[in-house]
Length: 352
Image 1 (cartoon, rainbow, N blue to C red):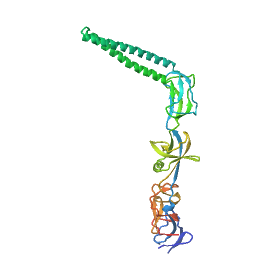
Image 2 (cartoon, rainbow, N blue to C red):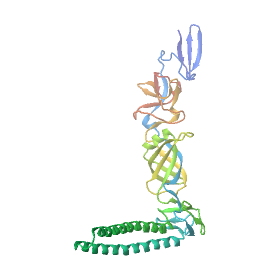
Image 3 (cartoon, rainbow, N blue to C red):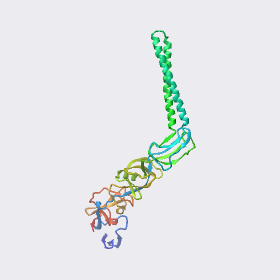
Image 4 (spheres, helix red, strand yellow):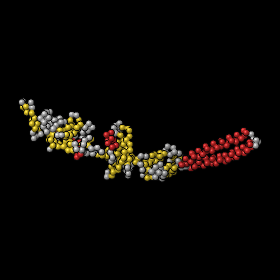
């Protein structure tokens, strides 16, 4: 039979018929066997969860990206006669960005308009001839087939008139396409063509980015996304400036290399300039146990909670070593802060 005697030097002296040996309390991952048999109370310090809990702040690299990036191209073939904006210019929606020579297309428009006038005159004549034929037919002095011919002539001319209206609209569009305008409030970031060059349909002329609608892009891991979705205080930090954000979307695609997902956030009020690099910062809403009070036992990582002077090991299945862990405890639950490394589940404890 062996009997354990605690000493003030933090060890146990085991005495038996065959002699004795000394074993420190914290010798192994688990406390020495048989301690409960001796019913020894281990001196510990414990703090309530409310006083101990922390709310971790999370950070991730982020960058401001414009929601619209447009590379405007020519839609007609013509020479460039003016590019009245420079790189860096802030332009309003509808502002002229590039001008093409429209002389050829104006001539084409005038030809179509002249043809339309000619058709209008022919339609007027055909209508007069039809009315006269209808009167003569009532007087039975005109053959019925001649009346049908007059009706057919008018119908053909009216169809040509409709087709000509479409041709005029197309010609007008070609004239309008010689002026390239900003489709939204924008910043000019690149000029791709210059005065004197011949532009063809599809030729890139200028690149602009949205000056009003920007958002923050950040790549987060899965556990970070869950915390960010629940957070109420998302912020974009740039040196000494901070911008309030709200989560817009999480892209449903995982990067095969980094194992992250792209998260997009929009500014609540003032915006940072597109291209600005900074940090996405948010605070966890759930109370956590600080990492230094988490210990490892054979079953995994966890904490010791004092219940009626008994130490109970609470396993934290989602805990990660060196990181605060989310735990469901009442505010007045006591967590062992000092003496935790010597404890085993079910040990008797006394408060210092």
